[in-house]
Length: 396
Image 1: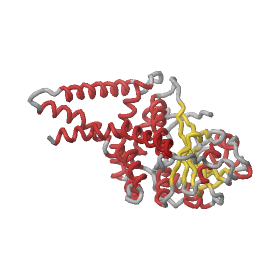
Image 2: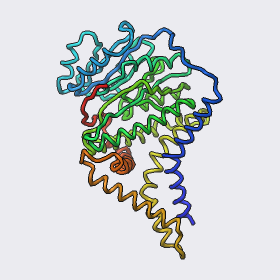
Image 3: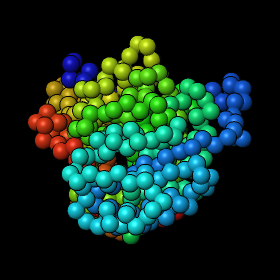
Image 4: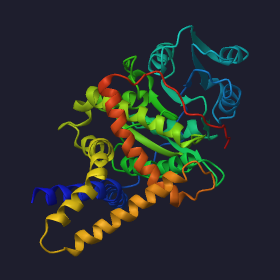
């Protein structure tokens, strides 16, 4: 029966995406560690000059703390440059930046977007390594050293840092959901890196070889993924460094987080239209396998099946002459899950809700956002100018 085939296909895809793929990566990584000889990076090699690039639009609440954080990074002061790209801010961002003579400042009167800001910035850089980070992100003290050590391997073109979302029981449901999401994402990136290459860096913190940066389209929504994709296209690996930590607080409200997820979804489909041939290629099976398992299935398969599965389940039960215990039990589980989602939806604006209550709703909201993001992408309605969700600033 076609309906049963679709049902079990959906079950397999969801189970593989969130359970099978992580277990498979973990097994491959463990096997590699057993079989491979010790091949640690040479941490005694001379540290290369680096430039920390931060794009800023209306970041008056973060400028001072970010510059202070950068100044506290453990790295030779004569080998580190701070470059800020101020992008048509309407608040006091530019005024605050001009107070600091120890930074390099690029300004534009009009708002060009983050992608074009990065294009302008890299053209001005003469250091071999570029560190890309966000204004509202706090970096760990040894983050730069932890990133650049991987570049002793000539096959490495990009190193992704570890994004951490700080939250407590008093924080919003969005913070808790995003925090747990990034724990899962960090595990996947670590395992992918262990077995070859991960597939992208996160905009909060990643490093690249300056010579490998290729201009990205000015209307790019997901600039970090676009930059990463162009490095993969050139045949280089992306490594993940868990000790290079970039910390920020989560979104203040679940609505802020939903808008952010919709924007990411629209950017995901834009990325597919521009870089699919390099991310799925016979010439790079490692990248193809990881991109399909880590991203593509989440973007195009999991969201529709998450909606269709209970409907298919009900059809199967209705069409059978005799009740099948397996389908009755699966329908029961769907009922429990969607009741869980409903409870999370009702309590989404309460700050004292335990993560275990909100996580199913957060995951469901994230998947549903893919639909709206897809519609926005098709209609060309997603603005590429980035609008960060409202967050508070926390230090490590």
